[in-house]
Length: 237
Image (cartoon, one colour):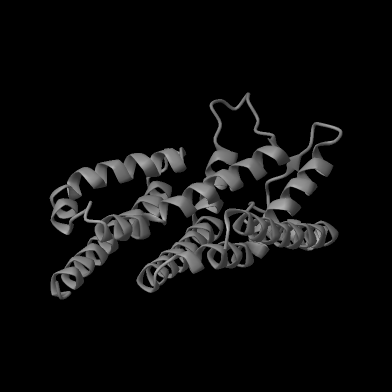
């Protein structure tokens, strides 16, 4: 295939992805009650959200529907992108890329689910009830709630990519299990700081909910890197 043939194929796949995302977003927009029942589920039942701008609820509806549509079609998007790249890869490279993409997607989804069901409910309950004085009452806006949920979900999804990143670095010889074990204590400090950034509540329990899973991912990454090193050592030269 020529360069222009590749460009035409890429454009075709992008159009398919765009069409699928639009259809899914429109579907999410039409099912407003079900969509926001999911989005508002982590909110404490005694917390009331308000809207202070005339167009904010409609714009929030559109934004959440768009992100919901992208989330629904994300497996199809990944498939289209992989199908475009795969023909140019060798068999071993294709197998490696498939593992990285599949593992990365599952770990990203796991991070989002952990945030949705565990971390964000504790965070929003703590921050929603925190007061510097009895004279200052909390009034949480809808846009603030949606932004917080989106940012924390994205951060947790990215953090959960740690094992895949370590595996790829080990494959190219840039990371060793001995290095990760040697700097384990330093990693714990960084993990705690990262957990404090993701959930700036000051609550030790919520901080543990974030830090412990990330630390377990670090230990899992050490095992993955060690396994990768053993396989490379046993491969015939």
